[in-house]
Image 1: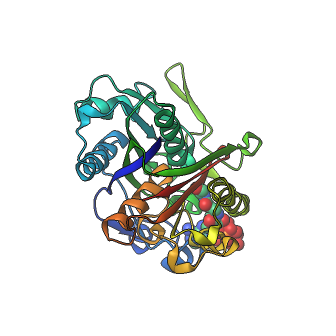
Image 2: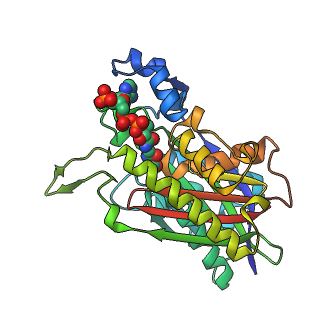
Image 3: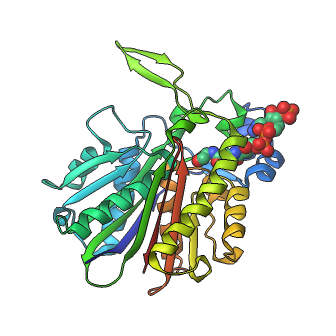
Length: 319
Ligand code: UT7
């Protein structure tokens, strides 16, 4: 029994916001710095009041439409997000209600930018165990809500959006291998170290990052985990048809591809137009490449993420 991917969908809110637009809003930055250091040219930012569940709902509806599965037939809904609508109920339960599904197991996964790969790995294990048959896996984020717009070292890097996939039990190959890891000792290099306590925000409720440390860590673990899932599946990284790394920085993406010996034109890149959308980045890029026809039936696609925690995860998919 395999978990097979039968549909993808995504959603980006509003119009692209360019680097020049950010500078025009008073951020002490410029297009040349952002493009040279990160490859980001624009990102989408949700309108005030728009939530992760709203973005995730549209991505989910598009994935369900492609898969031909009705919401009522889902028995598992997992949402990867670090920017949930509420402390509780989970974003997954909110999306479930708006899809009109009753009875599916629904919960959120918190593994920041590796969240989608964690959620995919969990869903795959539920399906392979035989306990569940049709899973909706969503990555949805409004990172613009946790950015310090006075910190030019972080606020220019992120964007909002959502991506989703539908997985179904099948006897044909689908998800060939998954892996997930964490190293909590690195919790200090990327975090939002705030909380709500007694009705007040305590600590620091904005995203903080030691950029160079994150950069080095990301390249190392993205290469390691890609090797790991290929080894589980018994293939070489060079056998992969498409590599979809977490879209945080073009230099991290290129360094990872180079380390793995994967040709530059087999790497899907959206960071230039989406920025870093955290848990949404991988399913957004996957949906783009499925819909524009780059990803074809029978091909092998390696998706991987890395983020705060530190967490990292990967999955090797056969289409
Ligand atoms: O999901 C994981 C999320 N995070 C990441 O993937 C980020 C990984 N790290 C990175 O991508 C890079 O470390 C950054 C893009 C964040 C930074 O690049 P860097 O080459 O490590 O630059 P830096 O932090 O060393 O900063 C260099 C300079 C500083 O100026 P001084 O002190 O050298 O005069 C910064 O103040 O660049 C300045 N700077 C900016 N200048 C214009 C920082 N942010 C900006 C900005 N615009 N937005």
